[in-house]
Amino acid sequence: MTPKSSHDMLLELRRKQTLSEVAALLSVNERTVRRWENHESACPAYLGDAIRMHLTVDNSEGSFKFADLFAGIGGIRQAFEDIGGKCSFTSEWNPYAQQTYAANFPHREDHVFNGDITEYDASAVPDHDVLLAGFPCQPFSIAGVSKKNALGRAHGFLDPTQGTLFFDVKRIIEAKRPAAFLLENVKNLQTHDRRRTFAVIRHTLEKELGYHVRFEVINGIHFRPQNRERIMIVGFREENDFSFEQLDLPATKPKLESVLHRTDGTEPVLPHDEGRYFDHERNVVPERFTLTEKLWEYLKNYAAKHRAAGNGFGYGLVRPGMTTRTLSARYYKDGSEILVEQVGHRPRRLTPRECARLMGFDDSFRIPVSDTQAYKQFGNSVVVPAVGAVARLMEPYILDAVTRARAA
Image (cartoon, rainbow, N blue to C red; front, top):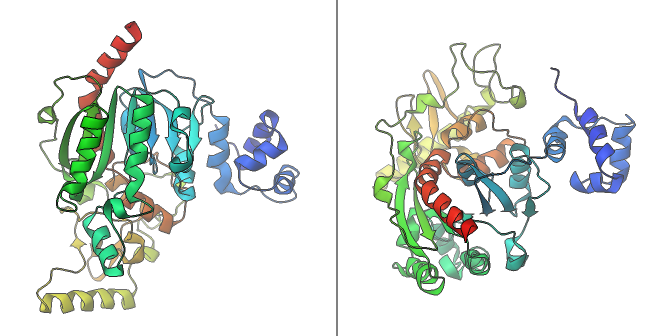
C-alpha cells in the first residue's frame, strides 16, 4: 500500500476539523492551510507525522491508566504501555519534545495533553492509577550542579525554574491519590546537598502523602551499552511486598556494536529516516557525522592539557566491542563523551538513530526534529528497557490495586 502524502492526510483531517481547528493543531495560520489545500504551495512532508497523529484515534482500553509528567519524548510512557497501561494525561513543556512525542504516540479523544504543569490545576488532571514522572534532573546532577556553581546560580530545590518541580508532582499525587507512582532521576539525587534533598523527597512522599516507598539505583548498562545510572523511586498507596531485589537484570551486558549502523549491507532501510542517518548506496554513515579536523584537534589538545594537570577530563573514544559513557543533552555540541573510532580516519559522533537505539527505542521510533534537538532529547531520555524492567516488577501490584479498587 502506498503511504498517504501529507496533502492527502491534510484533506482527510479537514473533513473532520474546521479550518481554524486544523490551523491551530498544526501551529500555522488559516491562510497557509488554505494554500496547502488548494495546491498553491506544498504541504511540508515533515508535517505528515503531526497530521497522522491527529487522524489516528486509539480507543483501546488498557488494564490500568497512567499520567505521564515531564514526559520528554515518551520513554517512560513506552515502558508502561508495553505492560498494558493506557496514558490518560501527558505534560511536557518543550515544543520540540512535544513534536517527537506526538509523532510516536497516537492521538486519542480521551487523552489530555498539557504543556506547563506548573500552570495546570491538579484537580483537572484525569483520574489515573499510576503517576509517572521523570522530573528534571539538571538541578541535582553532578554536571548540572557544577555548572550552576561555576555560574553562581542556585541548584537543587533552590533552582527557581526546575528545582521546585518535584512539588508539582506532590500536588498532583495529593489531589488524585493514584495507586502507585514511579519517579525517575539522576543517581546524584540521593547525595545532593548532603542528602538533605532526598530526605525532603522521602518525607514528602512517605509522611505527608502516606505512600510506601522503595528506591533503587539502576544502571542502564544491563540493557543497553551505556553506563547510565538512574534512581527509580516507586511508591504504593497501600502496603505490599514489592521489592527491587526481584528485579530481572539480563545476565549479559550488550556491546556498542548492537546499536551501531551496520556497514555490511544489512542495515535496515527506514523510510521515516529518509536517508538522513545512513547512506545505503555506499553502506556508510554520512560524512557530516565525522568530526572536523579543527574540532578533533581541539578535543585532543583539551584532553592532553587535563591529563598533564592530573585530571580525567577528555573525550571518550569507543569501538564496537565496548560500552559508552553516559549520553548527555550537550552531545550535539561536540560529541566528546561518545566518539566512535574510524580506523584511518577521524572519529565520528553517533547518529541520532544510533542514539535512539542506545536509549532503547526501536527502529520504528520516529525522529521528526533536527539533529541538534534529537541529540538533546535522547540525552535527556530514559533507557526504555531499564524502566521496562521496573514496570514489569510493578505490574502485578498495580493490577491487584486496580482490581481491588474496582471491586470496592
